[in-house]
Amino acid sequence: IEAEPVVSESEPVELDSAAPGSAELDASAAIPVQPSAAEDSAMRVVGYFEEWGIYSRDFRVADVNVDDLTHLNYSFFDVNAAGELSVFDSFAATEKRFSADQQVSRTFTSAQWQSLSDERRSSYTTGSDFMVMSLADGSINVSGIPQDWNTPGALAGNLRQFDLLKQLNPDLQLGLALGGWTLSDEFSLAVAT
Image (cartoon, rainbow, N blue to C red; front, top):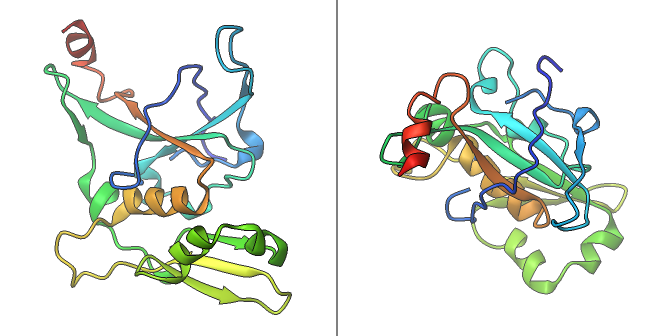
Protein backbone atom coordinates (compact mmCIF):
# COMPACT_ATOMS: atom_id res chain seq x y z
CA ILE A 1 0.00 0.00 0.00
CA GLU A 2 1.38 3.36 -0.98
CA ALA A 3 -1.40 5.52 0.40
CA GLU A 4 -3.54 5.21 3.48
CA PRO A 5 -7.13 4.31 2.67
CA VAL A 6 -9.67 7.02 3.32
CA VAL A 7 -12.79 6.20 5.27
CA SER A 8 -16.16 7.86 4.94
CA GLU A 9 -19.07 7.72 7.31
CA SER A 10 -21.46 9.21 4.79
CA GLU A 11 -23.54 7.11 2.45
CA PRO A 12 -21.90 7.14 -1.01
CA VAL A 13 -23.76 8.23 -4.11
CA GLU A 14 -24.99 5.14 -5.93
CA LEU A 15 -23.81 4.46 -9.48
CA ASP A 16 -25.99 2.40 -11.72
CA SER A 17 -24.61 -0.05 -14.24
CA ALA A 18 -25.13 2.40 -17.11
CA ALA A 19 -22.76 4.93 -15.53
CA PRO A 20 -20.50 2.88 -13.25
CA GLY A 21 -15.17 2.92 -13.09
CA SER A 22 -6.66 4.85 -6.53
CA ALA A 23 -5.64 4.37 -3.55
CA GLU A 24 -3.55 1.28 -3.68
CA LEU A 25 -6.04 -0.51 -1.54
CA ASP A 26 -6.02 -3.96 -0.16
CA ALA A 27 -9.28 -4.76 1.61
CA SER A 28 -7.31 -5.85 4.68
CA ALA A 29 -6.01 -2.27 4.96
CA ALA A 30 -9.48 -0.73 4.78
CA ILE A 31 -10.84 0.59 8.04
CA PRO A 32 -14.34 -0.53 9.01
CA VAL A 33 -16.76 2.31 9.67
CA GLN A 34 -19.31 1.84 12.40
CA PRO A 35 -22.63 3.53 11.54
CA SER A 36 -24.37 5.73 14.09
CA ALA A 37 -27.39 4.38 15.91
CA ALA A 38 -29.62 6.30 13.50
CA GLU A 39 -28.08 4.51 10.52
CA ASP A 40 -28.27 0.94 9.34
CA SER A 41 -26.79 -1.38 11.94
CA ALA A 42 -24.60 -3.18 9.39
CA MET A 43 -20.88 -2.45 9.45
CA ARG A 44 -19.45 -0.66 6.39
CA VAL A 45 -15.96 -1.17 5.03
CA VAL A 46 -15.29 1.60 2.51
CA GLY A 47 -12.43 1.74 0.02
CA TYR A 48 -11.41 4.52 -2.34
CA PHE A 49 -10.05 4.00 -5.85
CA GLU A 50 -8.00 6.95 -7.12
CA GLU A 51 -8.35 7.18 -10.91
CA TRP A 52 -4.71 8.25 -11.43
CA GLY A 53 -3.36 5.10 -9.76
CA ILE A 54 -3.37 3.36 -13.14
CA TYR A 55 -0.33 5.39 -14.19
CA SER A 56 2.90 5.25 -12.18
CA ARG A 57 1.45 2.97 -9.49
CA ASP A 58 0.04 0.57 -12.10
CA PHE A 59 -2.90 -0.13 -9.79
CA ARG A 60 -6.12 -1.04 -11.58
CA VAL A 61 -9.72 -1.75 -10.55
CA ALA A 62 -8.90 -5.44 -11.07
CA ASP A 63 -6.32 -5.13 -8.26
CA VAL A 64 -8.88 -4.08 -5.64
CA ASN A 65 -9.69 -6.95 -3.28
CA VAL A 66 -13.43 -6.47 -2.83
CA ASP A 67 -14.00 -9.56 -0.69
CA ASP A 68 -14.10 -7.58 2.56
CA LEU A 69 -15.44 -4.28 1.20
CA THR A 70 -19.06 -3.19 1.43
CA HIS A 71 -18.51 0.09 -0.47
CA LEU A 72 -16.02 1.31 -3.06
CA ASN A 73 -15.83 4.97 -4.03
CA TYR A 74 -14.29 6.31 -7.23
CA SER A 75 -12.21 9.40 -6.67
CA PHE A 76 -12.36 12.06 -7.68
CA PHE A 77 -15.08 13.78 -9.68
CA ASP A 78 -14.79 17.52 -10.21
CA VAL A 79 -17.66 19.76 -9.17
CA ASN A 80 -18.07 23.29 -10.52
CA ALA A 81 -19.82 26.29 -8.92
CA ALA A 82 -23.12 25.30 -10.56
CA GLY A 83 -22.91 21.86 -8.95
CA GLU A 84 -22.23 20.04 -12.23
CA LEU A 85 -20.02 16.97 -12.04
CA SER A 86 -17.33 15.95 -14.48
CA VAL A 87 -14.53 13.43 -14.55
CA PHE A 88 -11.10 14.87 -13.86
CA ASP A 89 -9.08 12.57 -16.14
CA SER A 90 -11.30 11.45 -19.01
CA PHE A 91 -8.63 9.15 -20.43
CA ALA A 92 -8.33 7.19 -17.18
CA ALA A 93 -12.07 7.28 -16.47
CA THR A 94 -13.63 6.48 -19.84
CA GLU A 95 -11.08 5.95 -22.61
CA LYS A 96 -8.14 3.76 -21.49
CA ARG A 97 -8.25 0.25 -22.84
CA PHE A 98 -7.20 -2.54 -20.50
CA SER A 99 -5.76 -5.78 -21.84
CA ALA A 100 -7.29 -9.20 -21.14
CA ASP A 101 -5.00 -9.82 -18.16
CA GLN A 102 -5.93 -6.40 -16.67
CA GLN A 103 -9.70 -7.01 -16.67
CA VAL A 104 -11.88 -7.29 -13.61
CA SER A 105 -12.65 -10.94 -12.88
CA ARG A 106 -14.18 -13.19 -10.28
CA THR A 107 -13.81 -16.89 -9.65
CA PHE A 108 -16.83 -18.80 -8.34
CA THR A 109 -16.64 -22.23 -6.75
CA SER A 110 -18.80 -24.81 -8.47
CA ALA A 111 -21.34 -24.55 -5.64
CA GLN A 112 -21.40 -20.73 -5.82
CA TRP A 113 -21.90 -20.86 -9.60
CA GLN A 114 -24.78 -23.32 -9.27
CA SER A 115 -26.42 -21.18 -6.57
CA LEU A 116 -26.56 -18.11 -8.85
CA SER A 117 -29.90 -17.36 -10.44
CA ASP A 118 -30.31 -18.44 -14.06
CA GLU A 119 -30.62 -14.77 -15.00
CA ARG A 120 -27.31 -13.85 -13.37
CA ARG A 121 -25.43 -16.80 -14.91
CA SER A 122 -26.93 -15.88 -18.27
CA SER A 123 -25.75 -12.28 -17.89
CA TYR A 124 -22.18 -13.63 -17.74
CA THR A 125 -22.46 -16.24 -20.48
CA THR A 126 -24.30 -14.16 -23.10
CA GLY A 127 -23.51 -10.72 -24.43
CA SER A 128 -20.18 -9.04 -24.99
CA ASP A 129 -19.10 -8.04 -21.47
CA PHE A 130 -17.72 -11.29 -20.03
CA MET A 131 -15.80 -14.43 -20.88
CA VAL A 132 -16.56 -17.51 -18.78
CA MET A 133 -14.01 -20.29 -18.32
CA SER A 134 -14.26 -23.57 -16.42
CA LEU A 135 -11.10 -24.29 -14.45
CA ALA A 136 -9.52 -27.68 -13.68
CA ASP A 137 -10.73 -27.64 -10.05
CA GLY A 138 -14.36 -27.20 -11.20
CA SER A 139 -14.50 -23.51 -10.36
CA ILE A 140 -15.72 -20.95 -12.88
CA ASN A 141 -13.77 -17.79 -13.77
CA VAL A 142 -15.73 -14.84 -15.18
CA SER A 143 -13.56 -12.11 -16.66
CA GLY A 144 -14.29 -8.85 -18.46
CA ILE A 145 -13.75 -8.76 -22.21
CA PRO A 146 -11.41 -5.95 -23.29
CA GLN A 147 -12.84 -3.00 -25.22
CA ASP A 148 -10.97 -2.37 -28.44
CA TRP A 149 -10.31 1.00 -30.05
CA ASN A 150 -12.57 0.13 -33.00
CA THR A 151 -15.79 0.78 -31.07
CA PRO A 152 -16.21 4.56 -31.06
CA GLY A 153 -18.04 5.97 -28.08
CA ALA A 154 -17.85 2.71 -26.13
CA LEU A 155 -17.38 3.13 -22.38
CA ALA A 156 -13.90 1.99 -21.44
CA GLY A 157 -11.41 3.00 -18.76
CA ASN A 158 -11.87 2.75 -15.03
CA LEU A 159 -15.61 3.41 -15.19
CA ARG A 160 -16.17 0.40 -17.44
CA GLN A 161 -14.13 -1.67 -15.02
CA PHE A 162 -16.29 -0.33 -12.15
CA ASP A 163 -19.40 -1.37 -14.11
CA LEU A 164 -18.03 -4.89 -14.64
CA LEU A 165 -16.97 -5.09 -10.98
CA LYS A 166 -20.52 -4.23 -9.90
CA GLN A 167 -21.98 -6.86 -12.22
CA LEU A 168 -19.65 -9.46 -10.71
CA ASN A 169 -20.28 -8.26 -7.14
CA PRO A 170 -23.87 -6.99 -6.99
CA ASP A 171 -23.79 -6.51 -3.20
CA LEU A 172 -20.83 -4.10 -3.45
CA GLN A 173 -22.06 -0.51 -3.22
CA LEU A 174 -20.30 1.85 -5.65
CA GLY A 175 -20.09 5.56 -5.11
CA LEU A 176 -18.14 8.60 -6.14
CA ALA A 177 -16.04 11.04 -4.19
CA LEU A 178 -16.17 14.73 -5.01
CA GLY A 179 -13.37 17.24 -4.88
CA GLY A 180 -10.24 15.97 -3.28
CA TRP A 181 -7.14 18.08 -2.74
CA THR A 182 -7.05 19.66 -6.21
CA LEU A 183 -10.73 19.73 -7.18
CA SER A 184 -12.32 21.34 -4.13
CA ASP A 185 -11.90 25.00 -5.09
CA GLU A 186 -15.58 25.46 -6.11
CA PHE A 187 -17.07 22.81 -3.84
CA SER A 188 -18.31 25.35 -1.26
CA LEU A 189 -20.05 27.38 -3.98
CA ALA A 190 -21.76 24.27 -5.35
CA VAL A 191 -23.16 23.13 -2.02
CA ALA A 192 -24.27 26.67 -1.13
CA THR A 193 -26.77 26.71 -4.04
